[in-house]
Length: 178
Image 1 (tube, one colour):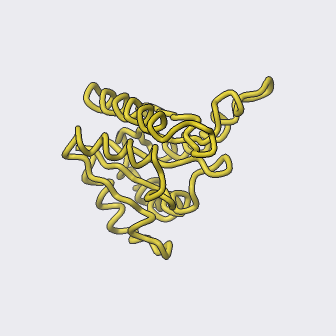
Image 2 (cartoon, one colour; image 1 turned 60 degrees about the vertical axis):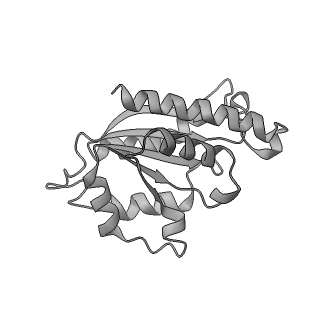
């Protein structure tokens, strides 16, 4: 069984994230989804409940949009509070050891806009997430990026939805084969 941490402040308006989550829950019925923005609109995270959810599962999927080359504030706060000393790190902080993590991020921009001759901005952005996973002794199992999904991209909702379904299928295939 897997846990999906959904961190999208505008989830009800999202085409891509909503489609990905629906695709996964339809085809992976044992998936536990925790919509942390919906659960904590006041940003008062129930740390014990979130830690218990993490302990129940061997695989964690982080589903979120990129906001200004970062994760949404609610997800950063979730990391700050839930991945606490003696839980996620420290001399007795091995509660997450060997759990698998899949990153699933949607990006409004096209991929070519985020790569220049000096650096890949997405790789640079994801370093902090990768380091957090590594520091808590978890294992990054896969990174799934879906680009060019902003309604401002000029793409139709049906095209974005079709690509999000494919994205969800890739995650599902990875889940079932790892």
